[in-house]
Length: 245
Image 1 (cartoon, one colour):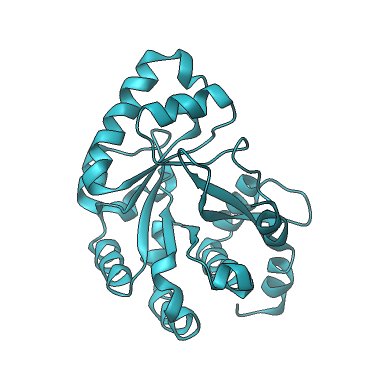
Image 2: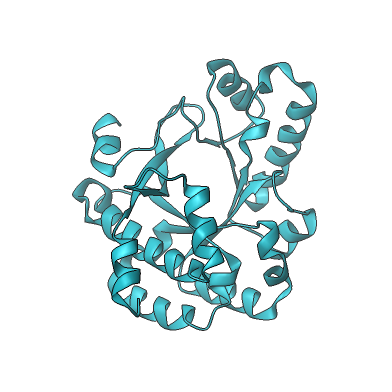
């Protein structure tokens, strides 16, 4: 951060952490770090405002550093094997400041790199960065350092099978649309069965937005290994999550 105004503004942000659980069994696999604001504004609104002011990469880098600091400061987490999922935009990955930031980040968190997953957001505004060779070169470097990659909200944005094949993410996160009413929708079941079969050898599949018990049971029968949603755990500050597990 280059000026006091930005620092003060970022001081209003914090993280909540939502569990990602194994299906079946309910054992916690990891947590997704979610940006929240003390002002009560929605995360989407916050990020849109930062994008408009060309501050989105700085927010991303703050989020990586802050969420990791909170996560691995907890002794139960530090000594365990839970994974931290952190959202990041391709425009941040390709930005000039990212390599230097990651060099500094590695000095603090090198022992935990394998336990950090970068969730790539692919909103329409980010479309051009997916064809940038710098993006793929830096993703390869992140993997060499031990980090893993997730493709977020698959089925909601502009995801194509080509992106999945080119990126070969370690995790594929299916959008919450597919969890809603899953037990009563044969078409959603067919698609999830397809992804579950594909991911057996390529990636770990995570179904987001699980809120009903019947949809959880159905996802398990379809071979989904990991789930996320209010039924499995609501976002909260880390101490509350750990106490509840």
